[in-house]
Every structure is written in C-alpha cells, then in structure tokens.
Image (tube, rainbow, N blue to C red; front, top):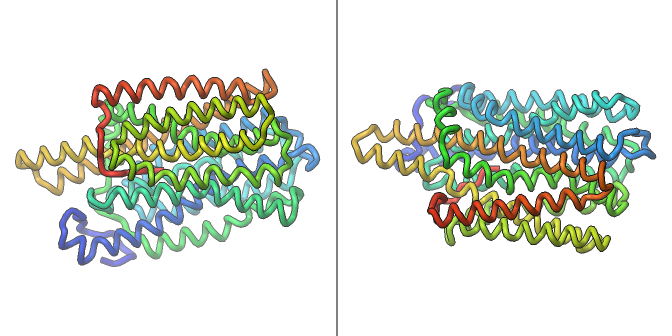
Amino acid sequence: MSRTRAITTWDPEDAVFWRTQGHRIATRNMWTSVATEHIGFCVWSLWSVLVLFMTKKSGFPLSTADKFLLTSLVTLTGSLVRPGYGWAVTRFGGRTWTALSALFLLVPVVLATILMGHPDAPLWAFLLCAAVSGIGGGSFASSTTNINFFFPEREKGRALGINAGAGNMGVASVQLLGLLVIGVVGVAHPRILPIVFIPLLLAAAGAAYALMDNLPGMRTSAGVYGKALKDRHCWMISLLYIGTFGSFIGYSFAFGLVLQNDFHRTPIQAAALTFIGPLLGSLARPAGGALADRFGAARITLISFTGLAVGTALAIAASTAHSLPLFAAAFTILFVLSGLGNGSTYAMIAVPYAAAAREAIGRGADAARARLDARRETGAVIAFAGTVGGLGGVVINLAFRQSYLQAHNARPALAGFLVFYAVCVGVTALARRREAVPAAVPAQVPA
C-alpha cells in the first residue's frame, strides 16, 4: 500500500488486517490530518487576535460593532463551508483534499498580512478577508469525516477525541502566538502573526501529500446527506451542538473584545487572558466523551448545560459588579463546560447507525457494505451538526454586537444566552426522559 497512490482495499473491522497493516496506516493518516486541522483552526481563529491589534491608537478606525461584525462573518463562513468540506474529502480522498485545503488557506493568510499593514483600508476589505479566513473552519468536517472512515468502531472514540482536542486547541495556539507578538513587538506590527502561518501551511500541505492516503469507498452520494436532514437524531444533536460548540467558538472570538470594552483591558492584557478558556475547553472535550461512556451522554450534557446557565449568571453578576477576576472565572467555567458538553453531545452520534448496521448484518446483509453505509451516514451527520452548531458562534458575536450598540456593555447578550441555556436544559431533560438520546455510548468527540 503505497503512500503515493490510493489504497485499494480497506476493512478496519477485520481484526487481522487491522493488527498487521490497518492500525499503522490509520494512525499515520490521523496524526497528519490532525496537524493540518490544528493549523486550519488557527487560521479560522486568526481574527479573534487581529481585532485586538485594531485599536484607535494603532490607526484603525473600526468601531466595536465593526469588530464584532468581523468575528461574526469569520464564524459564519467557517460554519457554512463544513458540509462542503465533509463532502469534498469523500470525493477527492483524504490525502488529496487535506493537501489542497492547506494550500487554500494561504489566500486568507496573505490577504491578512497585506491588510494589517493598511489600517486605513475600507471596512469591506477587512470583511472580505475575514470571510475568506473562515474556510479554515471547514477543516473540522473533512478531518473528522476522514478519520471516521479509517478507524474501526471500537477505536473511533479515542481517534476522534484526539482530532477534536488537537483541532480546537488551534484557537488557543493562535491566541498564544498573538500574545507573544504583542508582548515582543507591541501592537504596531500585527502582520507578523499571519506571516507565521505561511511556512506552516506549506509544510502541512507537503506532509499531507507525502504521508496520507486516499481510501476507496469514501464517496458519499447526495442521498445520504438528504437522509441525514430527515433524521430527528441529527437535528437533536445539532440543536445541542449550537449550545456547546457554538458557545466555545463564539466566546473564543468575542472574549478579548468584551474584556477590552467592559473592563478596558489593553491588547496585551486581553490577550493574556483569552487563550486560557479555549485551551481548557479543548482539553475538556475528550473528557466529556469519557464521562458519557461511564455515566450516560444525556446526563453529562444536562449537567453541562446547567453549568453553562450558572456560569452565565455569574458572568452577568461580575459584569454588573465590574469584577474582572469573577468575570474571568465565570468565562473559564463557560469554556470548560462547553468543551465537556461537546464531548457528551457527540458521544452518541454513531450509535443508531452502527446499530442499524448490526441489524442489517444479522439479516444477512454484506458486513463490509453495511459498516461502510454506517460510516457514510455518520459522516453526513457530523458535517451538518458542525454547520448548525457553528452558527451558534455567529449568533453569540452578533448578540454581543447588538448589546454594545444599544446598552454599551455585554449584559443584555449574556441574559439572552442564559435563556437559551435554560431551554437546552429543558430539551436535554425531555430527551433523556423519553430516551431519545442514548444513555451510554462509545465516546465519539468531533471538533
């Protein structure tokens, strides 16, 4: 099985094949894909840091509302491209699409490098660059779909947990890099940050081309995606993902701006706090899947949303009292619980499709075909749920924008989030009581 051509046969459920060849090949592909996804998340989150550089003192005329519009647009694009990325990796193969998608990201990075040297550029130019940067968010769907095909059911939890955590840690990585740039050269040289990713993307594309493989049987027809859209299980997960991943990515983009506006933090003071939440939230994602294994996915999701509501109430109280330590602590809780909830929400994603495959095999269906169909359906749900959930991040940034336009602080937006989390608590409790959400399942934790 050469690294330079497509694999012709792939059956990870065959124990002998997996032990002698499959595990080694799948692991190599997973780590290469995860590294590229991590950089993709960095590019997607780039504007969460660049907006901290865009101060009046640095010559940028953009208002707070303009900056939230930028972060909203980045999140929107990153969410909307996910179904396309999920489909593309099945159409072109993991090796081909991972290399191409890394090269695509050179466009927004080069544009950002140019624009950040021209603070007097019109708003539409920054919006265009932010929109293109959003394609980095699509890397989640392609990487997760690809890994879903490579690994057997018994090992997907660990593999997708690594994919989830490493991908989302790209948010913390770019924010740490931003802190380093601000700390070393100040806010006068923002172009240094996007420049860093040019060689990294070239290296990622080269590694994908040299180390990854294309699998046979990955092509997924439009009918599979249409079937997912009609599946109540898909929409239940998507709704919960709005509250978990939407919170994670939305707060990741907005937190620094909120610190600057509500607590008058300087760029370096804001950057020193922004990376902590995304880092802890990323680390909590695999833990959410593991806890779901042991105690039940719906139970952990219910606890997560209850905690999100409590954390939001604390953030409102901290904002009212103008207490930065309490506010930072409250947002740290929000990040950790959103990560935990992501893990538990997605822990059940493959269960109904794997169960349907087992039933089909029991009725005499071809085992390899039934399992492949289950992987295709799981991949379609992953792509759609990722899109719908990511839109929650758009809503968060738009809500903050409107909150500052009308009240000049974050409290009205936070009050709206509190109401939404209360609704999610009710939906999760109802789902658990009706057993619409499986109680305990193999951990499966996409980004």
